[in-house]
Image (cartoon, rainbow, N blue to C red; front, side):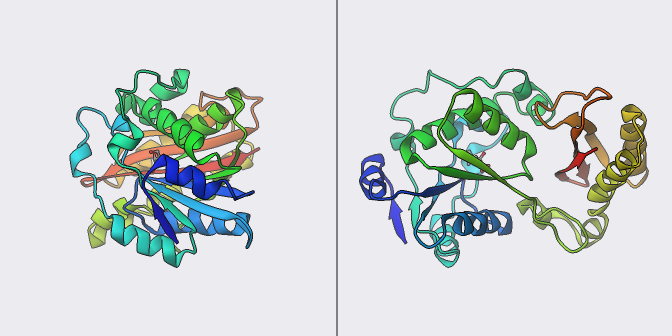
Length: 279
Ligand code: PAF
């Protein structure tokens, strides 16, 4: 596995490759990332090149989010990439990625202001901008993102389509523990009691999914029942909503491709999860 820090080295290393499968990350890699690398390795096959970028992107942090405190664990991360049979790690520093103030930005329209975007102003603009820059540097045929961050997947998938980027977006399924809890680095902050309670979030999403599948169409009633159920168990939900998969706006009765999204606090930990539903 090679570890590359500059764009010029990256370009000369990748120009011999005919299939590049790319997994962008901010490092601090956990089981969810390892699964994205497994998906990438599978897609690349023996002849393709799997590349992982590790870059903590200042542009997607809000003024109240501590960019400085984000864990930077490059050597550990590289060990994990090596074990996952990654071919190249691209780890540019700040001056390589942003040699001058980034005044040209990708604006993802309404979708950047709702749900997670409502509490993280500017976040998806920062994500879309850095991913477009990374795509231009790596020029992958395929890019892999995890559906655990569903809104991010939708923002980036819509960007690739609307800007005609020549990249196939491979959106990987969320990896779950046996009890249904979506894997996340935040699960590590849960106390033993909270860890026992945590699967109730995915249980609430599953209950909505099965009601929709049975023909229930009162979306508001389903959402507020789930909210009340979680609140009664001590959760503080930010949102539990049924949305259209395409743009994450509220569905009409004729929409068929739906997704249930939730964000809720359990003690001091904020968990997010989602479940796609086709009806
Ligand atoms: O999901 C992430 O880790 C980041 O948002 C991404 C896509 C690597 C952009 O910095």
